[in-house]
Length: 109
Ligand SMILES: [Zn+2]
Image (cartoon, rainbow, N blue to C red):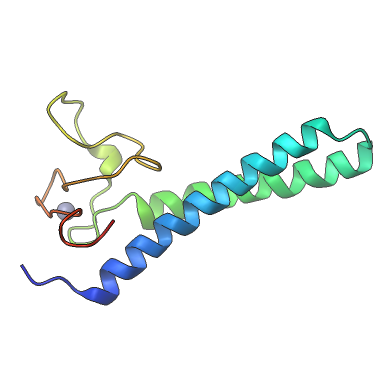
């Protein structure tokens, strides 16, 4: 199988970016939680919430789909043998359950 280096790089970048935004958003919310000043707290909560809200559709559109067959990993039937989690933001998807693309060894992760 010949992989498209550009395609796999962008898939990997989107996943890294989505994870970074999500972690940053949660981190900002946690900081906001401990901030005594109500105005600062409101601002931080707004920034953190926007980050998380933005990253969710981005994630499902760009990162939760097989880069080859474009099917969503969330459609994976619940099967204990499958190596795919339904929301693999922080889990690695080793193999596409639909077309069998080996994401791990093909350099997608
Ligand atoms: Zn696939």
